[in-house]
Length: 314
Image (cartoon, rainbow, N blue to C red; front, side, top):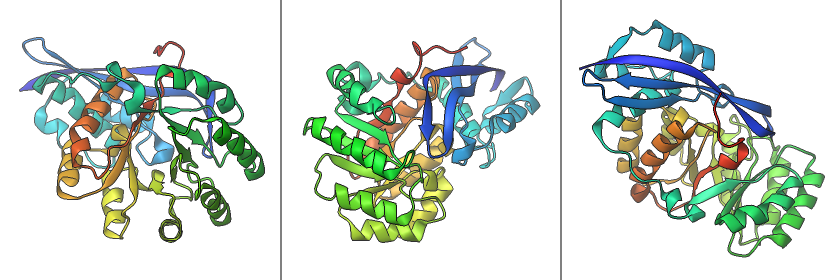
């Protein structure tokens, strides 16, 4: 079967620029795909690259879309090369829209299933109460952005204020050095609300992260290190048995990830890359399907809608 292909670029402004160890991010850009069958049925998908995380660039994704014919086939969709992981996910998601009805999002039932992203720095102290009242029980807070002394002072205050029922995730985005990571892990050892520290060291420091995971009881999650399926397979083979962060929109083939999770026992968290509602639904659908195969039932890292003005696209 042939499908008519249409695509368009989108831009979304963050309410407040997102500050991580990778830098400042103020605009999210991506591509919305529309496949139309001969009968007029429509399947939507989203390409949401994150090049500094290991995916293709937005320009590379656009170039790929422009070189495609106006009508494509299933064979075209499932032969997209691995070096275009966001394109693979976007096109496969659009094609799957034809095959089955979208599952109902869990968020309609309870935000308890989601992890909410707290703003960086002292702003987290002002916002967490609102998110708590909205129903979130898992929070993520960025570290490795300011001086460690400053962050630890804010962290100590945040921990004092948060209810004991909270699960708090600390995300360094690879921004710590080894001694700083040890300092954070030592402080977190006796804090029950800490769920894990995410990507404490840069992607070239896997042996050191493996050492840290064996030295502390606080869990560590790999994120940037496992930006796609190939990398996750590599570190699984090298002995990583703690948490993998899976960002569906940049991870690559949905089918291949399905097969890996069915054949391997892993602990994983599914997470957003600040995609639109189209990519979000596709990511949550995949996460919901794969969750029963995972070692633990962890909150999905998709609590990010508060980061945009009315969730609008331009």
